[in-house]
Image 1 (tube, helix red, strand yellow):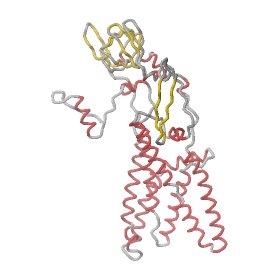
Image 2 (cartoon, helix red, strand yellow):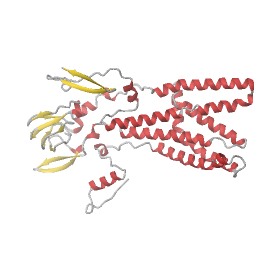
Image 3 (cartoon, helix red, strand yellow):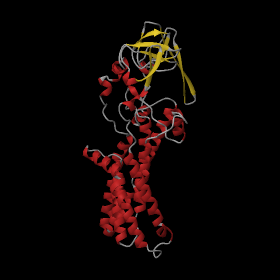
Image 4 (cartoon, helix red, strand yellow):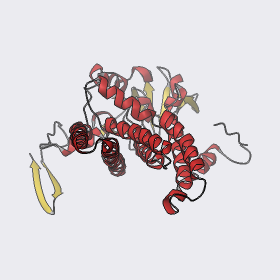
Length: 397
């Protein structure tokens, strides 16, 4: 999106405030000067829109079947229109579930998307059979499954996108810094900052590059870099590192390293942080593995029983089991719950990389503090926390 405004009538700040007030908060970061921030999954949004449109219209066309029964309006025409509206949902909107289920099967696993795909396909085939026999079918149920499952996926995807930690140090830095040249402050883009430049750091601003203090006294909060919450005092001639936040008056520093070569950058580029941990499987997918086998066994037993007593009932009985046993409620509840928990934690300044971390925290039995200086000091410290209505006191000496 491109916005053109007149600087004689307004300012960039007011434009940003207006955009924020109408729900389009600008993303301003140093990353914008280097590469674009990954956007939301537009394909998922399109799939949700098509599924919602088709689901709503199928429900409207199915009203004669809901209330009038057979012999009402031109039901056959409505049934064929429902089939036409269902086709894009089956072939396009449900692709996310197909890919996930196929990927799971290739690895020899049964995740929660496998029974959902099975329910979608069986419902579609059963509906075609019903239409060929002059009945309405279950296209409304099939498109409803896809529509509501996609709502959960979009919510979870949006939450992860907003709270994403897959970014580098430049996300947190300002896009410009004031360089002092001939006693004048010259706004300079951070990528253009060079070694030997004297920069001005205001109160509560982040230090963008390693440098030596040439004027003023510093009280630096290094919690962004080291996690240490106690500020460190620095005076003229001492080195301060990128990522520290100045908590006192204005400060002038002489840069000794470029932004890309600072101490904070070296921490961000450590190899162990780049190596991805083995992917963990959510309990929802583990539960679905057994759930799917149970459903298939029940379907097989049902088919055997009806095969002995009344073979004509095999098809409707087995398909009914596969449709009704779709674990869509479990997946929908999981997506909404995880997304809501991530937002609640973010309001309290606790940010998790993904929803799997929530499950890992739920299984934690011990907490180990591997930190010196703040939790452990000469005078000792007292930690108070509330647990199930009782107060526990933990002291460190």
